[in-house]
Image 1 (cartoon, one colour):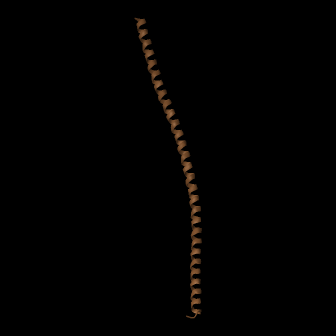
Image 2 (cartoon, helix red, strand yellow):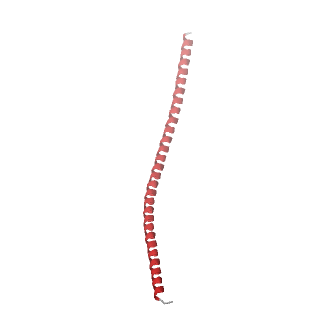
Image 3 (cartoon, one colour):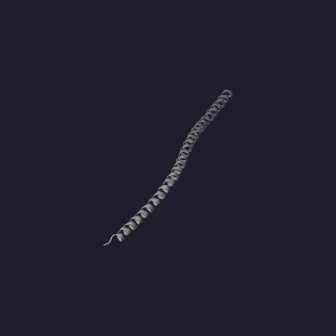
Length: 107
């Protein structure tokens, strides 16, 4: 009887050990999966951070480019206005000259 009780107790202990081992393995597997997931998230975060930095750099470059283009556009608009004024002045001078010539020549 004592031997039987000892054997039952040993089996209970082995069963408890197996259950605990399985619980630990499950937890360990879950922990390992969690760690992998965390590493993946960190890698993704770093990738997205680099993407954001590249986009921000592109925006800054585009802003600088736009500023330069705006400046060039203003320069061209100024040049066009001066050209238009010069054309108008030349037309007026030509018209005056033609009128003077017409008034000098007798009919």
